[in-house]
Amino acid sequence: MHEREIMENIENFVVTIVCGETGSGKSTQIPKFVLEAQTQCPWKFQNSSKGLIGITQPRRVAAVSLAQRVSEELG
Image (cartoon, rainbow, N blue to C red; front, side, top):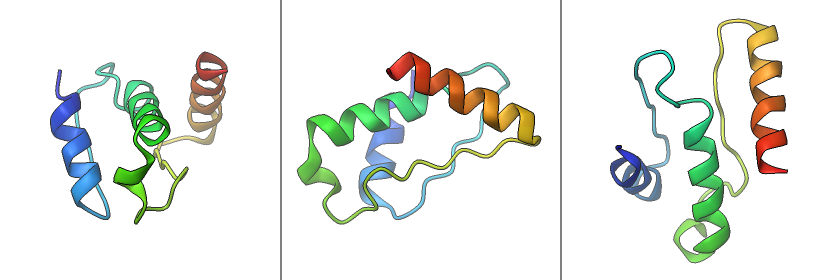
């Protein structure tokens, strides 16, 4: 729903922090469309740390399972 707004912030600022409700897709959907944008429009990200998408999780188990899920979904 807020993809364009989030992407504009990512393109224009060094750091973007996204807060939202549990289950809103912050940790699964946002990394996917950031990666897609970096792949499709690399010139927009030439001054950024390409490939660095950080997601925080309160527990190690959650972080590992989330990373595996997104990795599998992206192939």
